[in-house]
Length: 418
Image 1 (cartoon, one colour):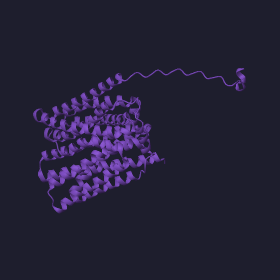
Image 2 (image 1 turned 90 degrees about the horizontal axis):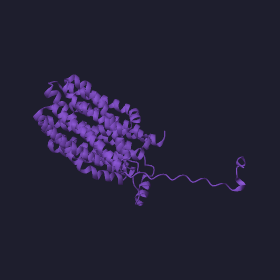
Image 3 (image 1 turned 45 degrees about the vertical axis):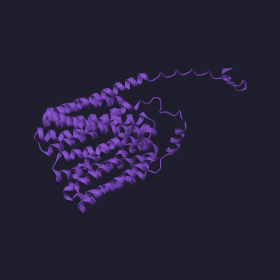
Image 4 (image 1 turned 120 degrees about the horizontal axis):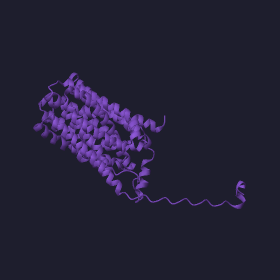
């Protein structure tokens, strides 16, 4: 097995474990808040409290990811998260105020997550050759989504049958395991020297053929908005408007997860055939249409349209991730993903609050339509921005004709041409 292959095989389970741990922590905290307070508003503020520090700190975190050892930063994020996960376990045993423990630990975890997003993207870009990024990003999203899907089952069952303290201790163990996997990848192939040499040359710039990453930030980050708001709207739609039980919510979520996993499997072929930019723009647009239709046809429509939307959305999401990762040189990937994370989280909070106001006045289907419209506008705006940036690029200089080869010395002339 090559060093590159070994690194990839270690990073993927590390991504899965980190995703599992982050979401177990958040789900367990939300369930504890509901059990203690019984208020959906408290849970909503918990999610906002997690999003705001990440939005503020992500740009700075992106710069740190491009300046320091990314492997050490990733492992440090995991170890910090492990310590944070133990705080609620200790608090529940010692009887500390639940609200302070939950909010404090999740704010600390959000700080670690703000650094993890750009660091993980930058380390992947550093260690995975560009020709293999399409395959790796598909597997990355499968690992990430699998961790998120499994976290709901693990968190809920463990909290019900084992209690909060053992759950948080187990969660701390997942972060430690992720750190061990990342450290086992070993030192990178001389990144510090390459970055240092580039930094020493004032004229060093990203490859001229790369696309501007501003519109790609918008394209990639709007996917986070769609997923987060969908997860908030779906339980309200099923339980409050369709008058069905939580089992239907679970079935819809499971089908959506299956659609996303199928999308990751199909992306390698569709991305190669259509191209990442075309797949991302078309995929997000089609997903917006399906998103607006999902609440219009009852439970049957949800069971059919949610997996279809997840299948299209998943491929667009992976394509936009690959585009953003390759839009800048390797030394600026952390900054690009830090910006995207900040924009996505800030937009999520704004859209979440706006959608809540809309659904209160006009109903949940209207909220779905508003989010779908915003997603379509973001995709169209990114496409227009990319086209304008492409037109503004200077025309490539013509390639000078090759000079004719000089005749060889008389003594070396080819006898066949004599």
